Length: 441
Image 1: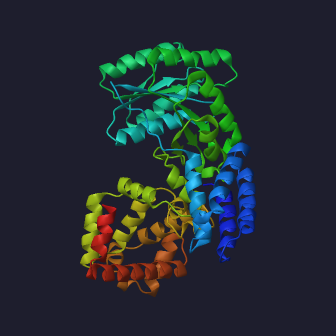
Image 2: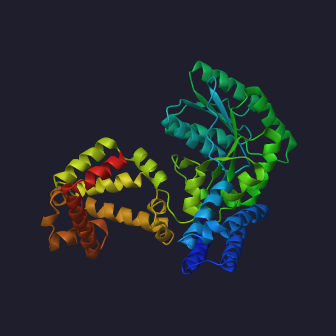
Image 3: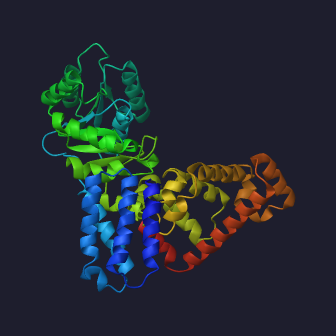
């Protein structure tokens, strides 16, 4: 996420860190590079200009010159001004009588239908009872797609085919939601160009008919300034209350995310971070700013762990660590629990100090390594998994043939496992493990 921008900014700060006291010339030179990095990341020119001016005003003052660690102080200022540029975090407007109507709008191909399903899934996890609405009657495949996604998630879909007008479908869906005690209605409207007056009037009709509490533009982050322009035009016509930026995981630049709030005044509310139906997260400016500057994002990592890791399994694993009965079956189970949290390279990017390394590890490499480890363990007998000490040379060759791995890879896995056992034994002898497990709970 925003790898190109992160690399360039970290290069600037690495240079600053080699100096003791910072002169105004040092700050100017660094900010010229920051300005260039932001423009290359397709950040709006006026946003860059204002951002650099704010940083410079603070960085050449007493705040930095009297600091014991001037370079770190400049990074702190950049971090704070990035947060200011990204804007305050804003949640969905879920107040007043239910059901709450959320209308998704945007261009064709921005990912609205999948995003509707992801949002419904996310809201259900927080205790809501969502209803998805197939209001895109212009693309027959869209109705089928949302019905299939709803079935996969076990979330009901209100659909009336492609012959009924979208405003009427949305009104009927709202009535059905009331009768079915649904707390949230998510409208998947057709993709349209903001210059198509007739299609934009239809959106206005839907808005007036069902009065959504939130009108969210679904925009492709990888289109950069185009996404910002589209947001401005949609906002003029239908009054956006927020944005969902999709494909953020593939956006190496970050122009849309860093520009849209300052240019349009419309807050980002969610980020789409992958293809899976749980790959959506609320937008937190401070966390994104930390990721951009390579500081990691521990809070999001903990939240992912809380959602993905079964607490009963975690408690049982703690008991096994304490009693030194943790075996390769348990190791395999832990790998599978971690996989639920998302691509390993993405998780590494959230860990301070490791986030820089994560950019050098392609997601397919780490996923391939996961599969290889799973294959090696799965090729062992039950007895071997429970007691790895019995795995001699001939057993290693058999495991190697069964898993498609080399004998060296089998040895590496066993070595890693022994190291892990040793660390866990040391932790379990004191308060370390208890404190660690409490953090995860």
